[in-house]
Length: 115
Image (cartoon, rainbow, N blue to C red; front, top):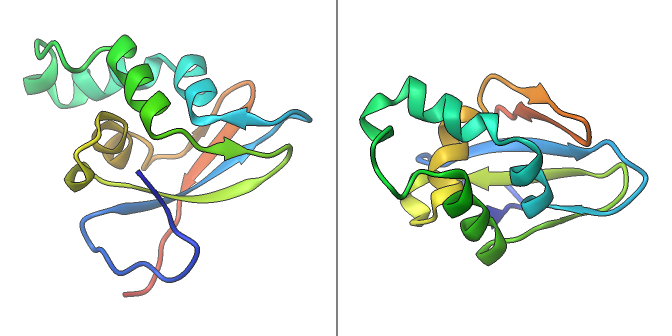
């Protein structure tokens, strides 16, 4: 997974703003653990992945641990997720975060950008 600090050049990735709504630092691992419904939603919407043993909450946590990001308190972070990155977290979140949403500690939204 990449964190982008300038303009987006890779059209096969999707940009999102993830926001830590809390007064404490959080991580991508915290985000994954707090939102187990996202992998289940991904498997329902893209049902050809439903029986693939790689697409589980446990494997998603492992991927987040390898590609972890720190979100400071009340911080918006511009994040790029993409399936071409070869990470499970990039593959799942590239598609499933597009509608936006929120949980106890986080909110997220699709970030449109000009190419």
